[in-house]
Image 1: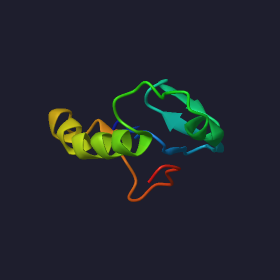
Image 2: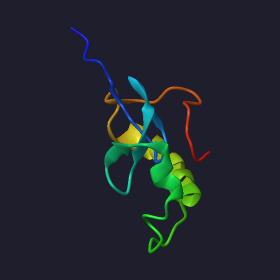
Image 3: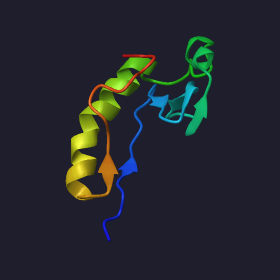
Length: 81
């Protein structure tokens, strides 16, 4: 029996089963879109967009290190990108 791959979310990705929620990697939680524009993470070194780009750049390594475990749709909705 094949195991279903776990959905990997990047910073700002829309939750698949709830379009009102978006993934904040800094909070490790799904939150309303307004969270990204309210200045909650102003002390972070990277902007939200830079964090998204960093996560996107690192994702192929995660796939290689854990083959068959993760999935990510092509061009999923993202409130930052």
